Structure formats: structure tokens, C-alpha cells
Length: 392
Figure (cartoon, rainbow, N blue to C red):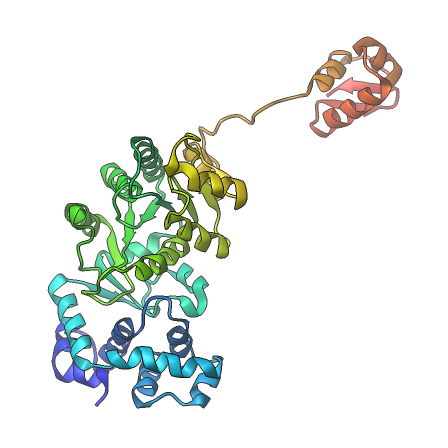
């Protein structure tokens, strides 16, 4: 009897999906089983599910993977034994039954790639994409993240960092941009709370089970997130947050969002891991500068200096990251150079003037005048005519 059969016969799957057909319930149970078996980001599991489907891949694992199966999934033969070894201890129907029972009691839903609400941007992770997501709250919220920004940063944030995170999040929410974060203390919490206060959409990706309250001090925040948005996880209900799961969770935050903004991060902050995932996925990356004396901004300064992150000083910069212009964006810095200004002052709008005359009137060398006129012509400020130059 397979894991799917055990869960169905024991009633856990029927209680979880009472209205589903037998075929639908078996498909969902197989996806749920993979969240129990494999750790987040397991590329071997992802490749098998992509090649054979969740149910057949699960059956192969239960019966014992063969080298032909692994090759058919495009995997190296050496990946077979380690994969079997790490999954074998979890091939237990009781573990799956417990996960389904926890999910039913917590009111969680299971979102799979076959669901219309599945966020397709996660597919950019390839074999490392999650096999399913457990969701506390509105599962359809994840389908509305195409226009979203991840705001992440240090847990031990400064008042400056929390203020900036809240300002950015609230202003983005006012413009209809969703905010994704990780529900941690510090920057994450400030961003989530600001969006909730503005009535916008915010989604938390967590490292443990979606029904697990972590950190404990954010019990109320997580409840509010689940009422107006969603709390989601790729780990099974009841799973404990671990360092590895936090690091893997970060790839989901980066993948879900159109851009990632790091508000504060220490030199060795785990937040830099999220930035790395965003860069690897080709997502725009921004960083907020801070005081050079602040250790909590050292990571942001490193991103600006070494990783081509864009400097973020306000919402207009964030909107630019996702390819949108802000109506209140500041005017471009600078203007005509001194040489261009002098050349333009030497021109008339009615009488064409030659290069020598412009040089004499401006007090500049002919070569400098010619260079300035070329730039002014590109901007449309002046135009060349048969007898010389005129103001545009």
C-alpha cells in the first residue's frame, strides 16, 4: 500500500479534501507527500516530479528508484543513492497522516502547480521550485504577486531601518504594489505591518510549517496576515524552522517578487542570501544606504559596491526597479554643462551664427564649441542650418 493509499484509507486525505474526486484527492495527497519527504529546494525531487508527475515519482521512490528512472529524469546516476537515503526515513504513512491532520485543524490549503492560483514566477526556479505550497489564508493572494516587491532586512533592525521599511511598504501598497517578506522581527515585520495598515496586499513566506507560529512574538501579525493576505510555506504543516529552511525559503521570496529591496543587513546577514537568489534569477535588486558607522548597513553597502544593486532612497526608486515611473519622481539630476550653456548663450533664434562667431561670443575654443553644439543638437536645444547654427 502506497503513502497515498495509507492517507486515503486512514481518512486524513478525505477529511482534508472532502469535496474532491478520488483522482483529485490522490493527486493532491501525492503532492502533500513530497512536502513531507523532501527538504526545500531538493533538486532531485523536483526533477523526478517534473519528469514523471508527483504520483508516479512517489511510487518509484517507494518501490526503489532504478538507474533508468534517474537517467530519464535527466539526473546523474550518483544522485540516486543519496536521494534514497535522505527520503527513506520519511517514507512513513504516519508522518503524512499527521501533516494532513495538522493542515485540516489549522485550515490550511494546498496550492499546486495545477491550480490557477499557482504563482508561475516560481517556475523560474526550475528543478528547485517547490512541489506544492501550504497556505494559511487566501491562496489566491499568491496569484496576485506579479506586481510585487520583496522588502527584506535585518532582524536586529535600527529605528532608521524600520522607519524606511515601513515608509516604502506603505507607499508601495498605496500604489497597488504587493509586498512579500518573511515575517521575521525587524525589517520584515515593519514592512508587513505598514502594508496591513494601508490596506494593501502582503504575503509572508515562512521557513517552518504554515501553521507554526514563528517567531512567537509575531503570533498576532501572522494571524492578521492570514486574514488579509497569506502565510505560505513549502514545508509540511508542523515542520520546524531550521537554518537550512530559512536559507531555502529566501529563494521563494526572491522568485515571487518582481524586485527585491534590502533595507538593512549586516556584513554576514542571511538577508544577503535573498539578494543572491534575486541576482541569480535576474530579478532587479535594490539596497537602501545607511550611516557608514552602522553595522546593520554594512551588507547594503556591500551590495551597492560589489553586486550592482541600485541605490534606493525612496518609493520612486523602487518603482523604477519594477519598470514603472512614479508621478512624483524627482527631476533628473544635473542639466546642461557650463560649456553647453555658454555656447547656447552665444546663439540667436533668428540669425544663424557660424562656429567662429559662436567661439568669439562665448570666449571658448572652436573645438570646445563644436563639442558643446553637438550635445545641444542631440537634446534638441539647437539646430544646424545652411549658414550656421540657431537656437532650437
